[in-house]
Amino acid sequence: MRVRIDAELCTACELCVDTCPDIFKMGDDVAVVIQADVPVDLEDCAQEAVDSCPSEAIIIS
Image (tube, helix red, strand yellow):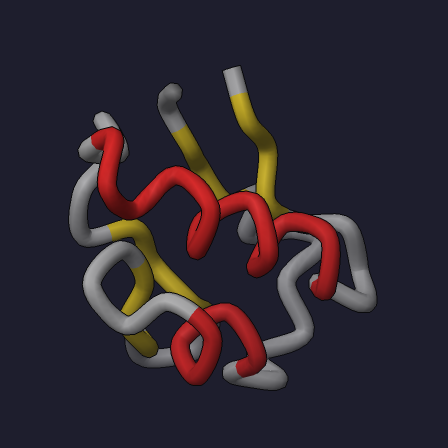
C-alpha cells in the first residue's frame, strides 16, 4: 500500500496525524506523508486515516 496527500484538497485538520502519526505529520500548511510505502502493520491505521479524512485528500494506491 502507498499513500499520498493531495495538497490542493488538504484542509490541515490534523485528523490523519492524530489517527496515524507514524505515517503522517503536519507540514507548514498541510499534512505530509512520512512513509509513502506503508508497512503492513500500519495498513489498518493508514486506511482509517483515509476513511476519516473529511476532504478526501489522502489517496491510496
